[in-house]
Length: 154
Ligand code: ADP
Image 1 (cartoon, helix red, strand yellow):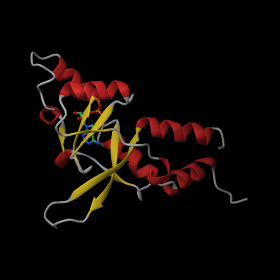
Image 2 (tube, rainbow, N blue to C red; image 1 turned 90 degrees about the vertical axis):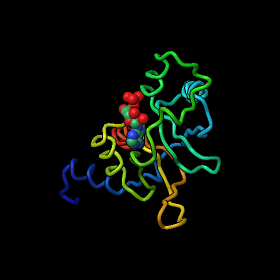
Image 3 (cartoon, rainbow, N blue to C red; image 1 turned 90 degrees about the horizontal axis):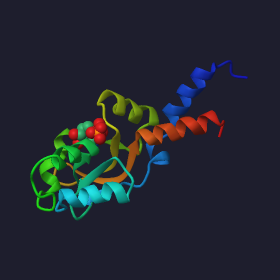
């Protein structure tokens, strides 16, 4: 018996478990999609956040439910408004890598007050412009799932 308290064991577990082991499949739309397309994807894919990518899966932004609700309340034709206009842009997107711990990822959700993080891989291109490939998603639902599994003692 190690003499560790249950809290110490949980802390150890979530610091060891890597995002790679728990991530979900990313739900993405390409940058040429309309706001209408994005809203349809939100329903058909049953997610709260969509990641916006180029044709070769490079991250360019994210849109949440509220981003889409806001534009849907406006006067414009949702078929004609590009999702790019309403998305949060790459420079402001909080990402996580597969090698980071579940604790690090969950901390980012809390600190930055977002529901989802794209799991990314750096594609080493020209040094001045970092290109990120979206390989998964880590969300509040992921954290709840881990919590329940730990509660069951797996
Ligand atoms: P909702 O708006 O549906 O409650 P969020 O709280 O996750 O969802 O989103 C809040 C804002 O943060 C939105 O404008 C959204 O575009 C943006 N956002 C979503 N995910 C991220 C992220 N990983 N990094 C930075 N901003 C994000």
